[in-house]
Length: 153
Image 1 (spheres, rainbow, N blue to C red):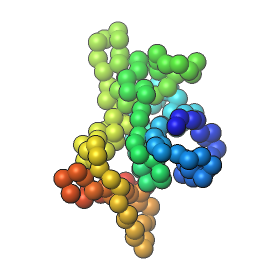
Image 2: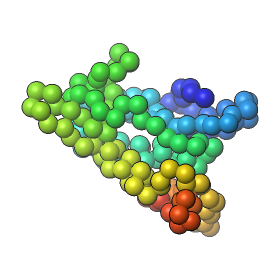
Image 3: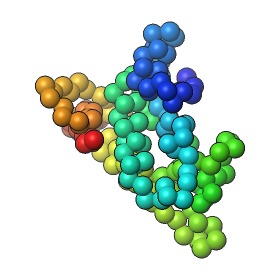
C-alpha cells in the first residue's frame, strides 16, 4: 500500500489509521514530503534534517511498517530530477558541474540502519521506564542476534 501523509498529521497516527481502516498485509514507510525535506542551499550538511530522517525511519519501523524506502537517493544540487515541481533533498547530492557528490547526514542515518538491520530481521518489543528523549527500535536478525538502534533527540 502506498500513500502520502500531510505534514500536519504524524506518521504514527497515519499508520494507525491505515491499519485500522484497511486490511493491510504490508506497509512500507517513506520519507515525509514536507517543507522540511525541500532543499535549500543551507541544507547541505544539515544534521537537523538528518535527525528528522532518522526519526522518520524509527517511527515507521516501530509502527506497523515492514520496511522503509527513499525514492530520491541521489538528486542534483537543484534538488532534481524529481516528479515534484518543488526541489527535494536526498541522502546523496550530485554536483554535475564539478563531477562531485556529497553524502548528506541522511545518508549516514540510512547507512546505519541498513548496516545493522539485515533483510529478514523482525522487530521485537523494547520498553523503558524513562526514555529521556531517546527514540529506539529493537530487531531479531536472521542470525538470532538482537540489534537495538537508538537516536537521542
